[in-house]
Image (cartoon, rainbow, N blue to C red):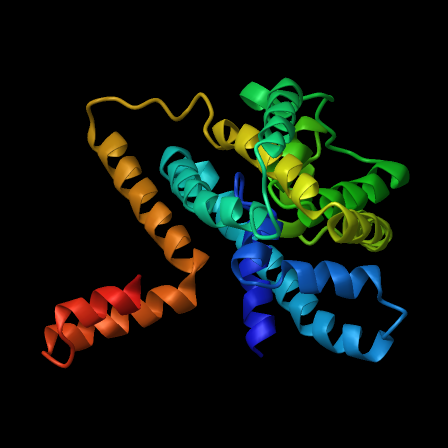
Amino acid sequence: MLNFLKGIIVGIGGIAPGLSGSVLLVILGLYHKTINAIGTLFKNFKKNVLFLLPLCLGFGVGVIIFSKIVDFLLANYEMQTRFAFLGLVIGTIPLFYKEVKKEGFSKKYYIFMLIALIAGFALFGANRGLFPEITNPNLLQSVFLGVAVAGSSIVPGVDSAVILSSLGLYELYVSSLANFNLSVLIPAGVGLVIGVLVISFLINKLINRFYTATFSVIFGLFLSIIPNVLNESCVLEFNLQSVISIIIMILGFGVSYFLGDIKGNIKKIKIWIKTLKGMYDFDKVKKLTD
C-alpha cells in the first residue's frame, strides 16, 4: 500500500510540467530499486513484479487523476500553477545534488554537468519545440508517444512535459489521458512497455558502471529544464495574481524540500517539539539535528 501511494505521487510528476516523476522516485528513495527491478526483471521475476506492481498501479492512478487536475489548472490558473511547479522543482535541487555526490565526486564531474547543461539549453531552452504539434496521431506516432513518456520518465531530471512539448506530443498526452482516448492510449501503452524495458536496462548498466558520471550528466540536464516551467503567461507585475504566484512558489519549494529528506525532517520536528516542551536541552537538540 505504501508503494502504491508513492506511485500516485510519482504519477503526479509524470504529468506536471517541470516536475519529473523520476526525480520524485529519487526523493522517495525508490529510483535505484525501480531501475534495478525493471532492468533485471526476468532474473528474479516474482520479487521484481511484487515490488513494481503496486508502484506502477499507483503511477497509473496518479497520472489519470492528475491529468484532469493539471488540464483544469493550466486552463484557468496557468500562472499560479506554473509558479507552484517551479517551487516544487527548485526544492528538489539539494537532494539531487546530494544524490550525484553519493558515490564519490571530484571536480572533473562539474565538466560533465556543464556540458549537459549547455546541451539541455540548446535542445530544450526557452520552451523550444523541435517538432510540430501532433493532434491526430497515426499508430506509429501513438507508439512513439509511449516510448517518449518512458524515456523522459525513467531518466531523472529529464522532465516529461518539456520533452513531450518539444516533440509536439504534450497536448496529445494530456488530452488523451483526460478523455481516456483508447485509440491513442493502447498503442502508447505498448510503446511505454517497450521503452521502459529497454531504457531501464541501459540506465541500470550506466548507473552500475559509471554512477557519478551518469548522475552528473542527468543533473546538468535537470538544471537546464528549470526555466521551461514558466512561459510567456508568467510575467510578474504589481498585482494580486503575482503575489499569490510567489507565495505558492515558496510553498511549493517548502513542500518539495521537506519531502527531499522526509524521515530526517520529521525526526528534527519531533525533537524540536520536545525541546519546546522542555524535554531536551538546546545543546543536545543541536547535536541531534546536526
